[in-house]
Length: 305
Image (cartoon, rainbow, N blue to C red):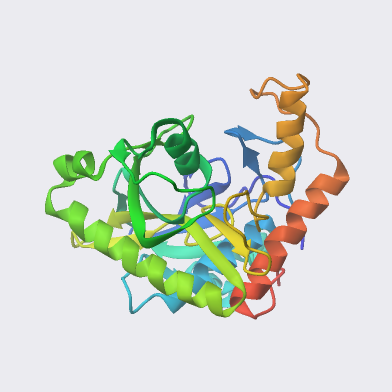
């Protein structure tokens, strides 16, 4: 599969994000193309991570199909032949997008991240350790890092155009969305429960994840963007799990560890431009993504055709 840093397709470009390009396929549909760009600490690295975009697209497609009965989504297809039938003008550029493009129905994003935490980790652990709260809500004493949370916690966040998203209390989300906030909470918890059960059966812990939702042309709410990928979730191996410490993770951990070491050594400020990445860090990151895909889907990765 050709490594893709930036797609350039013969369709109107809607937006270019940190990882994805969004194109207008027709009046009712968009084409999402996941590149191999990788960001960490809100900075896009100069080096791409081979096959990352294909993993993000094909794993999201797997989840959209698997969770279709749990909650509706904007997903139409990620099959290259079907996409080409729907958008025939993409034929000459097929090598760019095959295996990493997803055709979806248009939807207007709802401006909140719907985060579900089944384990105490990341920013949630940092806040709890410092203040005993999560998104400003008081939590019981005595919790430890990586502790399983039963029941899982719904922890919404505001979506930031740049910088980090901000965790907020559910009450603030409800003030903005009214009754739809409760529906999003219920949908997020149901989706997470289904995903956690699936991952558990395959030797993985879905520690936390974030969902995005939108409103379709009829005004209904649907699941959008990506679903339970290594970019939007923490996935840990079940083997060796022990609370009270950080866990190994099937995501950008090799990249984050390398960059964090540079920051602690005073060799990188944490801002752009990013430092160059050693080949072994890039290779290790690719391997994490591929292993997560294989364990969750038990299917081969489509590497362009």
